[in-house]
Each structure stands twice: as C-alpha cells, then as structure tokens.
Length: 95
Image: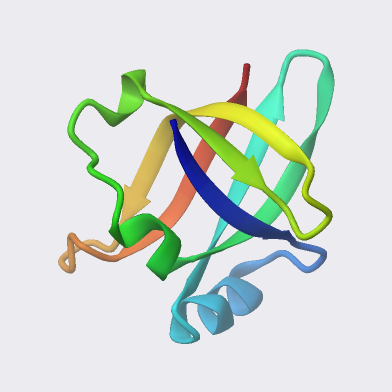
C-alpha cells in the first residue's frame, strides 16, 4: 500500500488551483459515504513515484500533517489536456 502525504485545503476555486499547480502541487478531494468531503493539497513529487498501472484497484494511505491516516482508493484523475504527465485533480474514495 502506497503512502501519500497531504495538507488540508481551506481555499478553493480556479484561481487558487492555478497557484497550486504553478508551485508543483495540485488539489484533490477525499469523500465517502459517512463522511464530509475533505479538500486537500498534494505535492506532485508524492505522486510521481507511484506506478499508475491498475491504479483504480490499488489502495493508498493518505497521511496528513497531524499523522491521521485515511485508507482510500482512486476514483478519478484529471490530467492537463496536452501535458499528460501533469495531474490537475484526483478524487479519492474513503474505504
């Protein structure tokens, strides 16, 4: 199981997301049946080393700055339209 470190995100919107991407980070979200959505920020360096082959069936551990652990799996990944190695957003499902 791969570990990914993240930070909680307070701001949202297109302008804030652009600033994140310029700084080599991107927005993501964690959601599940019995929990409120958690908007988060992930560094690109955390994701680059992960092998995305069959990533929809893989499970991940998301760890925040307070060392809280969320076991999740990826539901959706949005990429840049023509820079296919640049991630725009990831949706995680809490399991």
